[in-house]
Image (cartoon, rainbow, N blue to C red; front, side):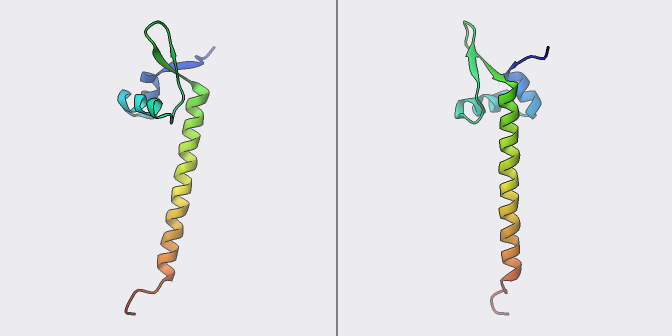
Length: 82
């Protein structure tokens, strides 16, 4: 049975980021996590990580669409003085 929750070190490895960057995602609320155990170690549910990844794909797609739209607008606007 695959693990339901993973530590931030695994999140960092999966996203190819540092452990401090993974912690920052949790602290900012971008990535939902829970604290477990007596020492309050952070754990991220795999489904939450997948949802975060999907949100990042969606945000990136929106940015690219906006960028293409701006590029198209610039190409349709004649340059000043021409």
